[in-house]
Image (cartoon, rainbow, N blue to C red; front, top):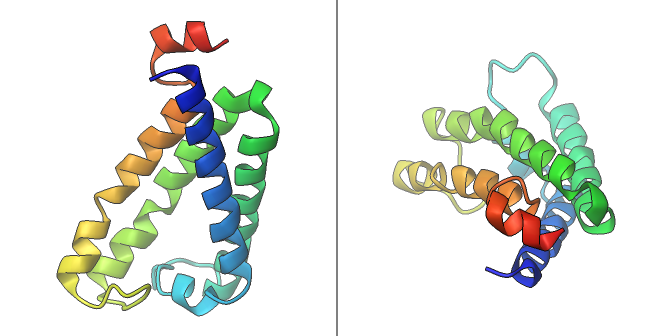
Length: 136
């Protein structure tokens, strides 16, 4: 895919992250709290607020700072890995949120997290070294 495709993927993911972060802070706070594992030592609401702020920051930076896309893409990928235990907890603890009301739905959702990790790495130019040289 061309550097234009990579650029579009970066803008799309950045916008998605800003939108998700805003939802963390507003209308979907309770839904996101379902993903905070019961064993996590920080208050669920505080965790949701902090992760929302991180999503807004990372998403906005991914869009606004293209010169730092590799670093921000790597940070986004790390963020997706760090929050993955929340998705696992939602499945294991059987918590309903975001329309995921069955174990099967919660299980299938787990497979989307690696896609987000790869998307962040690819859109940031971390993956695809041959294409990265052309994109610079």
